[in-house]
Length: 240
Image 1 (tube, rainbow, N blue to C red):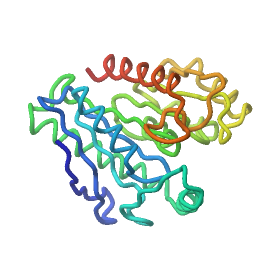
Image 2 (cartoon, rainbow, N blue to C red):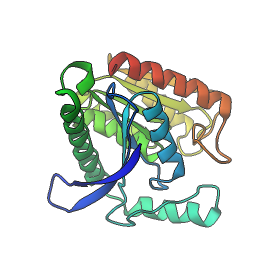
Image 3 (cartoon, rainbow, N blue to C red):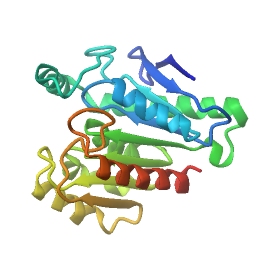
Image 4 (tube, helix red, strand yellow):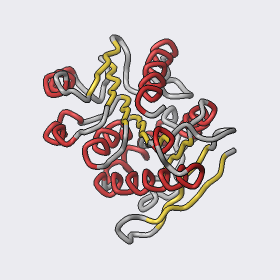
């Protein structure tokens, strides 16, 4: 079952919508799905629905609620891609992480309502794509989230100063031909994170940004399936 709920911010800025996909039975854990620059569009909702089918409570917050509430864009439409890039420039990422934290707290509460929030059943992870991949890394460093996955996160090389705050497992998927993350940035990520006891990086030769999208021209099916299988195993290990 799917629905939309509203969550209040942690800092009295207002409230924002969250797409929720519920599993058929008792959730094994919860996962917050962090949007790309295209909003909580059909692809992000499909990611939530797939997680719910796998037994997780999935929540996707509308992080652009203060600049373009409810926006849904298609990256394969040039004008909409430009609109998305413009929104990215207006987006407050620190506030976005606080809204993700509010969503994590709500997820924990929903799990507790279902079965007391104890043990594995009370755990919450995050998975993000593009902008969401960057925010997943920030969330790992700044919140108590139990496990974090980032797909083709942009600018993580500039966030390495926060790596010492990461206390729970992190998985990062890095397409080696990412036109938003050049080889130097990828090398810096490996140099800064390969020896981190909580962080695992996977490289995808020949793959570009957006390769694991659910729909559209960017998807590279074989690599997407490989990355998603690794993500599923990671969450099974760390969330249940």
